[in-house]
Structure formats: structure tokens, C-alpha cells
Length: 91
Image 1 (cartoon, one colour):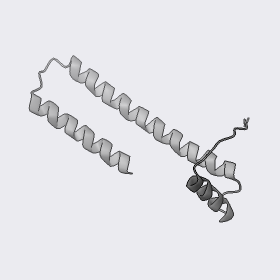
Image 2: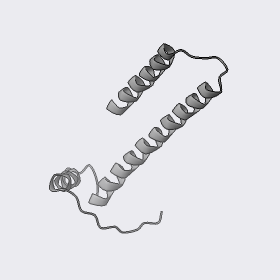
Image 3: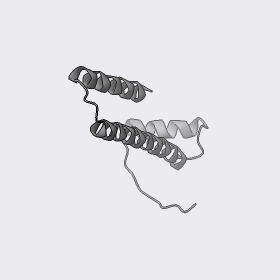
Image 4: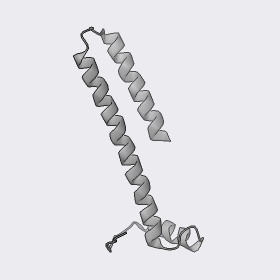
């Protein structure tokens, strides 16, 4: 794996948290903590992309559906999507 050295600035509380995790032995280095955090962020971004793709596909399918949907059906559909998104965001 190729690496590139970056210099970053963190708020004091985050820097303390990183150092504490290394001192506790949970990680071997500050860089390892940051890499783990970035992997989690990357995973979250990928999952978000997949959810957006699914929403777009649903919207495309609905737009191309010859059946007409009433406003109550459309509202209920988006309420379900919002509820699912809120549950996912909390986890």
C-alpha cells in the first residue's frame, strides 16, 4: 500500500481523543486512528450513495410507470423513505 504523508489540524478535543486511543493501546499510532475513522467515513459515504441510487431508481420507475399515483400514495411513499433514512442516519 502506498502512503502519502499529510499534515492535519484537529480541534483540541479531537486531538486528545486520538491520543487517548493510542495511549489506551486501542491503536498503534495516531495515523492508525485517523485511517480507521476515514475508512468508516468512506463506508458511510458509499452507503449513502447506494441509498441515493435506490431512490433515483425508484423515482425513475415511478416516472415511467403508466399508472397514475394519487397525492396520498406519493406522500406515503416519501414518508416511508424519510423514515428509513432517519433510522439509517441514527445507526
